[in-house]
Amino acid sequence: MNDALKHRGPDAEGIISRGPVALGHRRLAIIEVSAASNQPLRDESGRYWIVFNGEIYNYRELRAELVSHGAEFLTKSDTEVILEAYKRWGEQCTERLNGMFAFAIWDEPRRQLFLARDRVGKKPLYYHPLGSGGVVFASELKALRLHPAVGTELSPRALGQYLSLNYNLGTDCLLAGVSKLPAGHSLVVDADGIRKPVSYWDLAAAFRAKRDWRSEQDAAEELAALIDDAVRLRLISDVPLGAFLSSGIDSGAIVASMCRLRPPEENLTFSIDFEEAGFSEKEGARATARQLGVRHHDRTVDVNLAASLPEIVRAADEPFADTSIIPTYHLAKFAREQVTVCLSGDGGDEIFAGYETYSADRIRHATSWLPAPLIRTAERAVAGAWPVSLGKVSFDYKLRHFLAGHSADHRRAHYSWREIFSRDEKKSLLRDGWQLADNDTFADFAPHFEEVAGCHYLDQAMYVDIKTWLADDILVKVDRATMAHALEARAPLLDHRLVEFAAALPVDWKLRRLRKKHLLRRSQRGRLPSAVVNRRKLGFNAPVSQWLKGGLGRLANEVTRDGAMDDWFQRPAIDRLWRDHEAGSADNGLKLFGLTCLGLWLEAPR
Image (cartoon, rainbow, N blue to C red; front, side, top):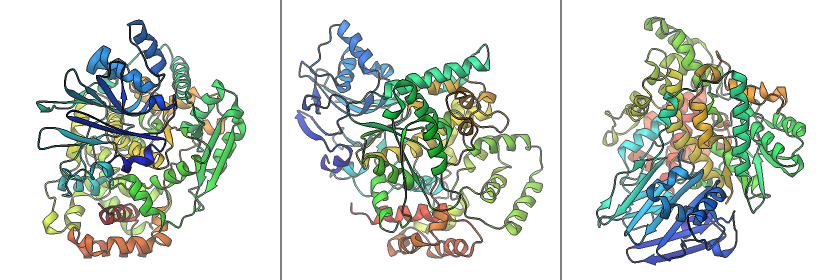
């Protein structure tokens, strides 16, 4: 199991056994890189042990506070700070940590194991109950699957989620019996067995408690200062550090802050490019880099994915088909040639309303008075007369999705903007033995909507996206793609103070009419070139719809029409998806890509 995680930590390894518990760890050395900080790590008494993946950014402040209370330290690492914080504050120690983390602490005096995961879910933690009442856990499914207690049976519920979204939600995993510890939760295992996970962070409260600012400008200045402080904390590193840079405002804001905190020429930035028209951000990233004065590096990605896609699917660890994992994987590989840590702009779209889906929510709300028959007529007209294009989230693709979800209430409509296979399409796709007639993936979104039921419909949408899309898609993608190359990614915009700040903003300061990220843009005036501040979001998607009609198509055809897929899916339904896509009568790129990734995962050795 430990060897299976070598890519996450190539610098050191360790395994200890303490009575009823065994702990293993692979280390990527970032802070206090000496062997003294290798893990599993014990406290000075030898009665508390920890294994930890991530970084604690406020560890120096916490260390000073703990020393004032009499704590004794054997190392200068952030790992030992977590251990001493647990000894001082118990299970409430998580509330004091600013960082990204998944950790396990063996508390020998109490004979209990304490597991915890960071607030938004940057670091993963899978677990499986043992028949004895104990638990086996790991950072990735590929390690967990090596334990003899973990079987190979698949979960119909998780399969339904995957077909709906191209990823899995919350605690669910495609392997039956395996769970993911939810973001912002902790878990205790003791002689009585596995307790119910406990939430230690209530983001919904921040959405409900709107703040009053004297002016929008005051809020913008506070936001800029918060970004600077979040970046400052994430510049702490004993190894080379850089940043991802696209043409957009999120990564631009991070790099601009880096340049305020240290000389610009010390900052290395990285981006990658596609050859396909409409998918390139190269010139925009270069322009930002020139004006900020950083040392920028970019590379064009080879679009022949027949060889690299299986490798990317293995890195993803569980079935996962967000197309942006392809550029993220190549970007991480490129950056790792020069640095071990990279800052990223992840989180800006979710907390500051940067997605087109929020504009769709607002337009749907403004036009909700239109009669459903009229919308259905428009939907048929677009389907029959509007040609299908394969561009990056093209207008016709967005229009078709918008009309399909328009007549639903705001909650189900927002869910539908991201839906891959509808409930009816899943029924026709799956074989009788795997029919999921009662499987409505929206039911897994509904509880999150209820948690902020009294809030503005756009705040509800952003909260749900933080709990689902961000935690279960975006951060999974970033973690697996970067850790596959032993590169640590840090996301300053997901500092919990920034997330809470954004939640407390008025909706119109995030989405001003249809202008996305309004306050974030205002906060960057004078820091970034006006062209960057006002630039339209391009996104980091890969042109898979085009690739499936080219070099990737042969591999995808073989995988989706393989005999193993016949155990699950009806061949005529898959044939129809291919026929319509190749004929240009439908853009089935995301559907076929999802099935391809699932097929590659099923084919991979267990």
